[in-house]
Image (cartoon, rainbow, N blue to C red; front, top):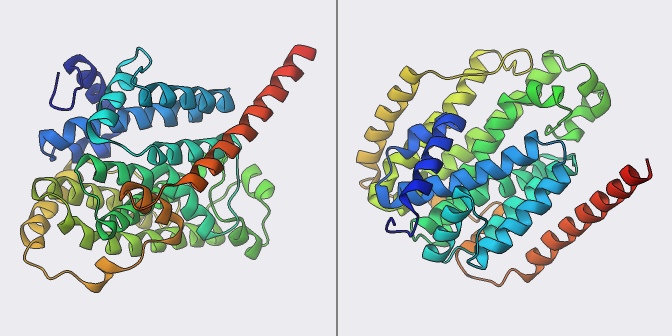
Length: 344
């Protein structure tokens, strides 16, 4: 067993899964110390598995409900007999991971299964909080970081990364019937969601929407930087690298004149090496720089519940109820579909 209670074979499986499924995170994770990298790989493998099952499966609602059951088993100390589940259960036990954090991720995946649309940028941030900032908060827990200010900046980074992903994947998502652009932006442009999805084009209006997403991501990347000094010194290089690599994806979208409909931004190994070099320089000077006032800015309203949960400042009973309500709605919907299939 590793120091975190993860079986070496399970860790090897998680490492291989991330190597093929998430090149950007894999590149950054190699810069983390082993005591952070190993549980981080287990965490990302479980989260990636969850995301893929909901994204790629035909039975999205069923996939979310099965993930709920797998979380229940992991937190009961009886994980499903699969490498990702066993590794995740090990880090839950070793780090006293608050259940509200993976529950937030599960809620975001449930929203995907419901094909929820987001009216405003705040709504998109709320979705990003669940599917990305929750992972950032869990990473902080793995590093034994419970400071509210540092957690808030980690959540800024998670939301920024997800906004970058959304901006990069507008066309790919549209072709799969998914829409994460704020619908009020579409309305301002005289477009309906149905019209946009039926014929996504990289015109001036669509490019402006992508640009607006990346502008918000850039604001949050800059806010997040001050929190890196609050992390263990040996972990800062990996987090700086992740910040620069993901921001590099957004820069590539900009170089494509914000066309993420007919083209998908990609970065090269050489670019990643350059960003890792920049991360090393920033890491070297981070501890010498005075902390800017933004370090102590309140968390985004959409991520405050994650900061409270990870910092153990509240008992998130209301949040647990909201997640249960979402899953109950999903279960009722799934049951209705099951009856319809039987009748047919």
